Amino acid sequence: MHWMEQLTALGGVASRRQLLAAGATSDALTEAVRAGLLFRPRRGSYASLAASDAALEAARSGGRLCCVSAARSYGLWAGTDQRTHIRVARHATRLPYTLAVRHWMPAERPGREIWRDSIDDCLVSVVHCADEETAVAVLDTAISAGLTSLQAIGELFAGESVRARAVAAKARPGSDSGVESIVRQRLTKAGHLVEQQIGVAGVGRVDLRVDGRLYIEIDGYAWHSDRGAFERDRARDTGLAMYGFLRLRFPARDVLEHWPDVGRIIETVLAAPDVTGPRTGQPFVQPELADRTPKERARLRTPTRSSLATPRFRASGDQTMLSSR
Ligand SMILES: [Zn+2]
Image (tube, rainbow, N blue to C red):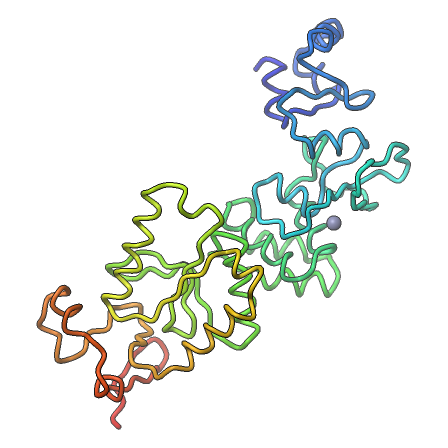
C-alpha cells in the first residue's frame, strides 16, 4: 500500500513516524506539503485534505477526539451535544481554540489512529461524560454497527465504577438508531415491556413493540430520502393495519423535541381496550374471518361496537389465549 493510501486508511491524519514506516521519505513528505497535498496540523503530524474538521481540531491540539465526538466519527448516535470532546495530554500546550470539552484521562487502549480514541476508549469516555440516556444510545448503536457486543461491553466495563457498570448494563442490541434506543429507554423506564426489531409475518421488521401489542416505527431525519424506503414504510403500515395491529409512527424529531406529546399518545393508545393485541407476532385473525383471504379479512374487519366488546385477549407467557369471559 502506498503511504498516501495508508494515510487515507488512518483517517487522513497520521504521525511522521507512521508515514515513514509506511514507506514515505522525508523528501517525499516535504514535497507533498509544498504541492499542497499534505499539511502539518502540528509538529510531527501530517494531514491530507481527506481529514475531517474534527480530526484536524484534535490533531492541532495534540489530542484525540474522544467521547461523543469520537462516537460521531465512528458513525454512531452521539446525542445533541455538538461541542468537540478531546482527550488531551496533561502536558498539552496548544489546547483547542474552540469551546471544546477536554478529557484529561490518558487513553488506555490507544488505536492506530492518532486523532481519535479507539472504539473501546470512546465508549468508556461516553459513559463517564454523557448523560445516561445518551450513553446507552451510543452503546446500543455501537452494538448495531457491529463495533462491539453485549459481551465485549460487559468485559470492557468490568473494572469501571459502579455507576458506569450500571449504565453499560442497560445496553441492548436492536436499535437501528439512537432515537429508537431513546424511545426504548423511556418506555422501559415508564414500566413497559419493549421489544425491538420484531419480525411480523407478512409485514417485515418493525422497530419497536410495546407491551406485546403496540407497534412503533421511528422515521429518521432523512426517512424519505429514497422512494424505495418510502414505499417499504407504507407497505409495513398497510400490513400492520391489515392484520389489525395497533401501530404508531413518529418522526425522530418529535421524539427528541416533543417527547411529552409522543409519550402521551403512546400511553393513550396502550390504555385503549385490547381488541387487537396478539403477543406472538402472528397476525390475529378473528375466528369468524378464519376462512377468508387476507384481502377479504381487511375489508370485513371494520370495527363495530360489538367487535370492540368481544373477544377479549389475555396474555400468558408467549401464548395468546381467548379469555372465557
Ligand atoms: Zn466528553
